[in-house]
Image (tube, rainbow, N blue to C red; front, side):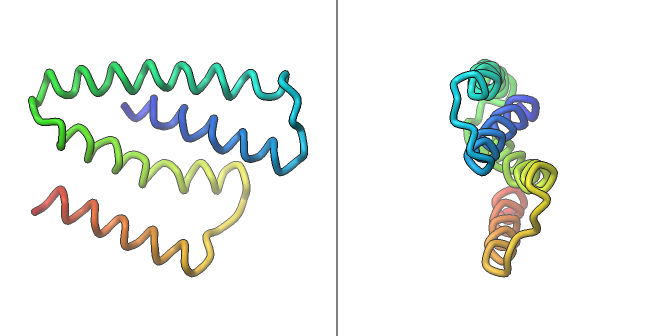
Length: 105
C-alpha cells in the first residue's frame, strides 16, 4: 500500500511541477500517467489483500490515509523545496492528531 500511495503522490506532484514550469506536452505527461496506473494497481491489490488479511475495511482505510498523511509532505518538500505555511502546517498537525485518535481510540 505504501508503494502505491507513494507512486500516486509522486505522479500527482510531478504533474503539478510540470504545470509550474509550463511544460504541458503529452510527452512530459506520459511518465506521471504510467506511474499513476501502476499506483492504482498497487492500491487495488493492497486494499484487496488488506481486507482479506484483517477483515475490516476501516483498518485498511486508516492505513491508507495515514500513509498519505506521512508521505505527501515529504514528496512535496522534496520536489518543490517549499515548507508549508502556517495554515497548512496547522491543518497537517490537526490531521495527524485526527489519525492518531482514530488509531488509538
